[in-house]
Length: 163
Image 1 (cartoon, helix red, strand yellow):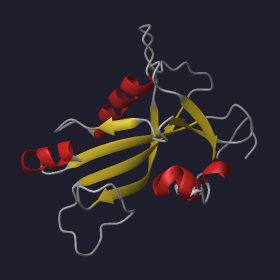
Image 2 (tube, rainbow, N blue to C red):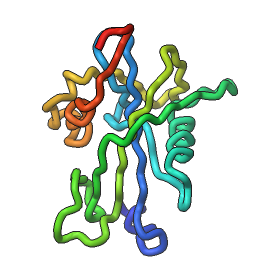
Image 3 (cartoon, rainbow, N blue to C red):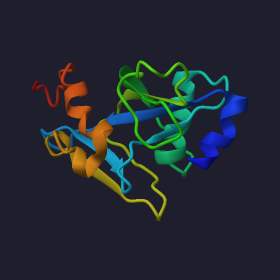
Image 4 (spheres, one colour):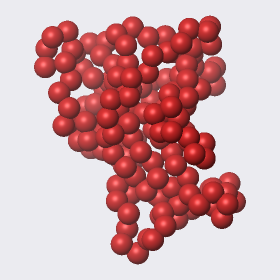
């Protein structure tokens, strides 16, 4: 958290964007997670537009290296989480005593094509976690990722014509 604290006075806060790429190799929706149990995404540049920034971050973390352009389709905003201090905990609300949160993480739903190829660095491991495994499992995945099944419940996912 030292780097976050160092950049605070000049930048005024950090805008993070995390993607929730949905895929369906079978009838169960799954969420691709990095080995460190993080969603793909990262920090927006100062003044960067949200949609273009999210596409840039997806290209950096999951994009192909063979020159083929990925078609990332950002569907909707799923949730917002705030970090009130330079400490690790994030909350799905801004606590009443906080006037300037130090970090804002916005979760965006990204529709993936039916077939996709990812370029994942060798030191990363991409895991497809089914929603039922994430549900009510904050001990293993943390509160943000464990809340995804509830946040995504407002969407009707259609796979092969089946709702």
